[in-house]
Image (cartoon, rainbow, N blue to C red):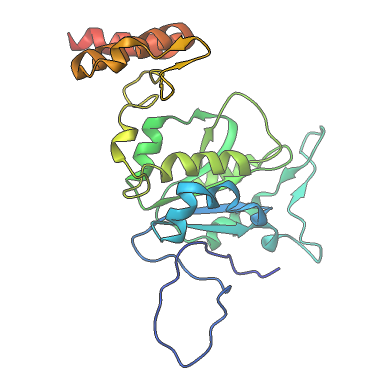
Length: 263
């Protein structure tokens, strides 16, 4: 496996008399939002990120992806990256010196985040904030996690994608990248579609309907067929509030408090 991280995304094009290997690594173009992923399994990327709108945007150079192989910084002939936990216990822990070398090898102007179930919950607001920056570096843990000293030394923020435990940080990294990339200019066909979706206004999104007008004896609500945009907007807000109050009381309390303070 090559020690050079492979960059996904559009290559720059220039005339040359020398034949080029079209599969050779290339650096992201300047100014392009870039996700750098430190992982033991770079072959997992782009994965789902290479499909649909995110994949098309990746091909068009609207964002770039650079997986970085943690194994290349391993220790010894076998490039060991982990060791037994101090104090005993099951599993293995990623070594501080190995992770430190990888972090130093990855050049990035954006924040460095460690995907961890003990981190602060990732939110739509955070996705929006990250989309305004130059990119992000994501550290994917494995085994029992990462030596705390390297996290403290580099001031790495821990971010959680949910209250559950997975075998590694690669899937959460993909979810985080997808949440941010879809907010980048030109990725979605209709930018307005991000304005009314879940969490954008502190509420869950209202229900959606389409053809046929009646299915399995269930008609589309009359208000949506009325053509009265003001009434449709009121119905959608009421439905969003009702869903949020019922399904996410935590979100509802925050929304209700903000609404009350605004009065």
